Image (cartoon, rainbow, N blue to C red; front, side, top):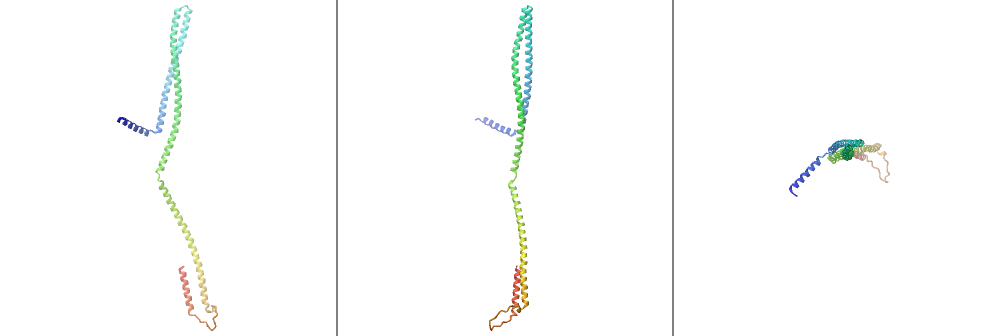
Length: 260
């Protein structure tokens, strides 16, 4: 392959690519419809001219037939008058118009065939233009839908979906943490209330015990039940040791209360 052939192919390929990229489907459809309508106008003009030529040939043919009939009558009249020479001239003139009429008949038949063909082509072109207009509207709707879908896909591709979902996950985590804190606060409030009542109950028991001890101390040794001793052993009063033991016990109870 020569260098110039390679250059020609490269240039041709690039030009084809540029033309393909420059082609707008909607504009190309509109242009195609315009070109078909221009062809329709030209075809109509051609049909009109063909019909006009057909009518002109038909008139010439009819005129020739009239001349043939006229010279036929003239020849008959000349024979009736006994002028054979004049009748011969009339027949010669008739033959001239007959030849002309034959040629006109052939041309008229050809023109009739041509006009019929042009009329059929005209009807077909009109039908194709109507069909093309319908297809054009359908293709335009499909093009519009395709463009909208392409734009939508571009928007979806342009969206940072992972970032958006991460933001939703962070917000959900915050909501869960807030709900957990609220639940913990409620549980702590309930536990604190129960502990307060438990302290009150424990304090009441201690107070009752303390009151009982005080009552026992107020009654003195007489209120203490006397235990039986072995024979020969006497009871020694411990009035000085009993208050110290009580005070120590009270102090121990106070320390227990303070630690609670």
